[in-house]
Amino acid sequence: MNEIFTSINGFLESLLFFDILFGTVAGTNIPFLVAWLIAGGVYLTVKMGFINLRMFRHSYRIIKGDYVTKDDKGLIAPFGALTTALSATVGLGNIAGVAIAVSIGGPGATFWMIVAGFLGMSLKFTEVTLSLQYREFLKDGTVMGGAMEYLSKGLASKGWPRVGKVLAVIFAFLMICGAIGGGNTFQVSQALGAVQGEVAFFAEYPVVFGIILALVTGAVIIGGVKRIAHTTEAVVPSMVIIYLLASLWILGTHYEKIPEAFGLIFSEAFAPTAVAGGVIGSIVQGFQRAVFSSEAGLGSSPVAHAPARVKYPVRQGMVALYEPFIDTVVVCTMTALVIIITGVYDPANGHAALIEAKQGAALTSVAYGTVISWFPMILSFSIALFAFSTMISWSYYGERAWVYIFGSKYSLLYKLIFLSLTIVATVVSTDLMVDFSFMLMLAMALPNIFGLFVLSGDVRRALTVYLAKLKSGELDREAIRE
Image (cartoon, rainbow, N blue to C red):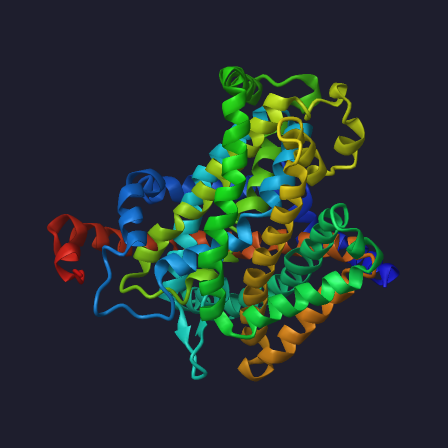
């Protein structure tokens, strides 16, 4: 099996598509993917009139339910769609990814993560709005949305039907692979590694952990998006609160070091030490980890938002603004501050082996354990919870992509394959498959952001109409008041 994935990996890297994607921009050390994401984020932030900042309060009112109307159409509440998307993003990227970014790119990488988070808010607004503009209600009662729909239908409306269809199928294939690897086997292996350290039984019988996780996950995903949304509405706020409370406790006990930490973040963002690999290294690490964490620009989250019950597509786009903000600007920054304040990111402090092996979760555990001795146990539980929540959301992403290619009648087959691999991941090495799937997951950004560039004018026009109605008071008048 490993030989097969090694061969496939080598073959894909030899293709022009992947050479462009993972190569560097001429004359710089910036990977093309990072430059592509930065260009998309900056362009859409400016084109949408800095929507990521000026509509923050209105977005909160939508989440609260202040703008429910009798004409809303969809399957789940806007907040349910938000938590479903957050359950896929708030997780190991916040725990492990941030530690890796800071240890490789230096404290300055935190600044670029925050910048990426704000730019990601504009990417999320645009892709989620398009997802609802082009979503389709299927005969089986489900909703088909996401990049597959706006690439095929949106580009067809611009006179490129064949290009749109090809890109949509490519995107769907990439998302299925990403769901199986990054959204499943990687989550299982990380969760198992964390739990084995606290529960000896699972160290001896790992397959039991896989069976339990498969049964619990299956109980949720077999019920469809409504059950997934109900589960994430309960799980996501709880796990974020637990993690943030621990972070705030550590920051509170080291409050005198916070100004110094922020000083390092800002100074090394533009003049990093040699360890950080220069300014470019800091930028690359910040943006790469932000993408892994929030998935902004990858086109995955729009699938979760597609069933949202709203009247105006831009309204759910505004709800999606909160996703990169919570995930990257808040949670990732909290983690980074703890990593910096405790000093574990510096190899000179005795953790060089973890840094070299890129054991981000272990590094974060050490950081929190220096202040809260029993926190590694809580972190192990949190990792398992984060892995579970990520799995149920990514299973839905992959299932929608599967249905797009093969049809609704084969939906159950995909779910059974997904759950079977959950068990397999506990008894065989999946490292190569995970690396392979992560490469394909990142590749989703290429067709997705291309679609956002082409279709951004449609979103801008819809936003202009919506803001005019908001200013005139029409949106307040049509809202249902309880």
